[in-house]
Image (tube, rainbow over the protein chains, first blue to last red):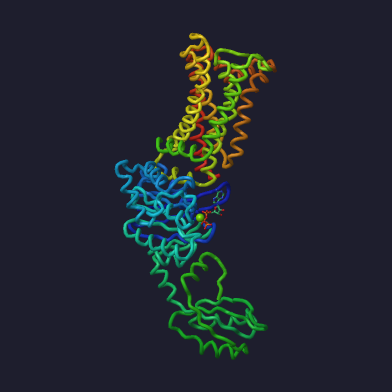
Length: 314
Length: 247
Ligand SMILES: Nc1ncnc2c1ncn2[C@@H]1O[C@H](COP(=O)(O)OP(=O)(O)OP(=O)(O)O)[C@@H](O)[C@H]1O
Ligand SMILES: [Mg+2]
């Protein structure tokens, strides 16, 4: 349904999106995950036709956004990072205007507005000026705006940013409900949000896609290994060398000094393999006593942070 | 297109902008009317007690060019700054229909101001002997006046599409108007033939003369319409271009 192929965007000579490709199947809810400045909004702006890519294509239902912009735009509802609302209009006036520019039949306008504003519980504020509404309600007005004309595809750029926790939960619930009828791409820099509402995740970092899979697969990947942090009296280089030599150990990484004359080390093993005894013996023999062993749970968050190159905190 | 036009007109009157434009317009017309048509003294203007509105209207064209930025400065700059342009640029609307919708909205406000302005010739007609004011001639003068206004509006719309700042848009539009009015005499005074040609192609006031004389000249008409069309086209291109560069 949505096909992104080798999309690249340069702002002057700043590479914002670097040759990314992904596909979204009809009816799925995809989380587009990345830290600030990763290129999420840029990609979404290209898919919706707000800006043009430097190279590459974006197609929806087989229509290319550059060659058939009208066809593509007709089947997309877009909630940009900043909802495109006019402060001085009332909600009702604004939605009528959006209906008019999105080719909603004049005779159907009032019933359509009522129907979609019901979905996001906007009915009580229809007559109020948008500028006087709270941030949460303004965001909802942005959401309804995306729903005008019942587009097949919804593109939502960080729909919960800047809202209070209660509003966040409500907006997420609305998105989940909408996911039953629409194909949705939702961007976020918060992993739990994506884990909560999406089936599939695309992780983007510095303009490149670093992972794309179903949430289930990503989670399974995590469960294949176990991590522990060990504190050892001795130098980092000697300790990591000893640990790497143990069978069953997949990955070893120094975490720095937390206590004088010791070093903390992250040890990753296959799931179900217990290396503690072998490790104890080896380190005792090398005269580098183990002072602490702590198992740590690896979460999706860790994977995300690892993929996007942020510091791990354990 | 009409949806955009309607929304923009509403917008002019939700905010003070539309009223401010009309108020300034009427104030200047009133002052000119007083100086040119009412008083017996010539002051510095060289006119006095004229029983004819054409001189006042002709003088008004210059002021008009300097107050059009009131209507045009925010027309694209503000939407770009607030990112509300994302709404219509991702809707099935074409950029051309957005630009035309907004342009026609600004022209509508100008028309409203012009209708109110009719009060002055009506006053003249009421207080002078019949026949000294020709209705047909007056209408021709208003057509010419509207065309000059439409041309400056198109330039203002284009300038607004080039920036995010309303202030920059207003200042640049002012400068363009000044160059158009003053550039002609400056270039001509330099004496070169080529420059004189350029000067006369810039000279909007000269083309107004035939309207002032009560004639709808074909070539001045084409001149104003094509310059307006050119700037509307350039506006569409400027918005289109920014989608590629993103800046
Ligand atoms: N108009 C622009 N001109 C120049 N650089 C830009 C422009 N827009 C975005 N960028 C740069 O491109 C990169 C990607 O920006 P983008 O807005 O797509 O990130 P994002 O993933 O949406 O981030 P955020 O989570 O902060 O919204 C950033 O480094 C940003 O500074
Ligand atoms: Mg963003």
